[in-house]
Length: 222
Image 1 (cartoon, rainbow, N blue to C red):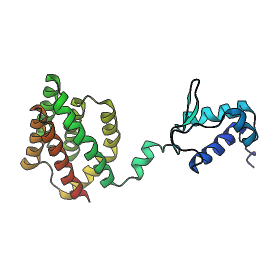
Image 2 (cartoon, helix red, strand yellow):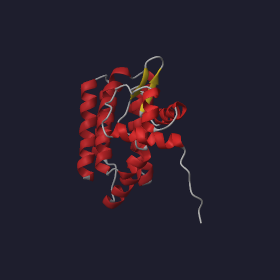
Image 3 (tube, rainbow, N blue to C red):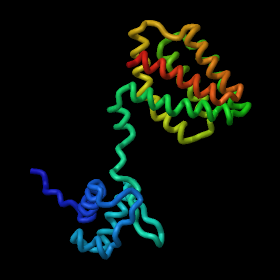
Image 4 (cartoon, rainbow, N blue to C red):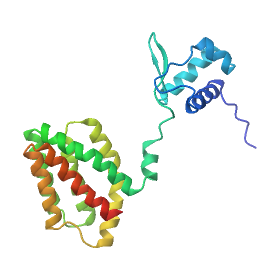
């Protein structure tokens, strides 16, 4: 028989506070009552309240501002990113790519350096020649799109793109296997146009070209 698990008071207090946040008792950005108020409400000591607050701060729900108090920074515990991606359908992933990459293409056109241009052109050439296998083609395609994300010089957009890549990779491989065809002159020409808009510093055209390309992919996968 498994032993009875005793849940620490701080864990219990954290869950009660979290439920109160979820219920809407405190709004986003609102300051919580002080420890002397919360402690009797929760039936615990002030040190337990402090530990509960530390737990919720670590989970992204609360934040402590020195000299100001404790404030609500999220209305629930953020779900694990990998779990979100595993549950998401592929169309949702493509829609996220559209949002990320169209903005990144615009930024890349404004911020790209000579080094970025060399990297984009190299990735484009590798993509053109990646014909030995579907896996090689998908990886080369991803590397090309990533070169534009790098040229945007926005680490958050790049991190989001990298987070989506594993979820998308297998789906693209499976789709192309069903089609029994991949690449081709027309497909590559679209990527050439996207590269050229970034290299030519045409931010509006870069965003439009990226959005158009990925919207076509969304239709193909829907």
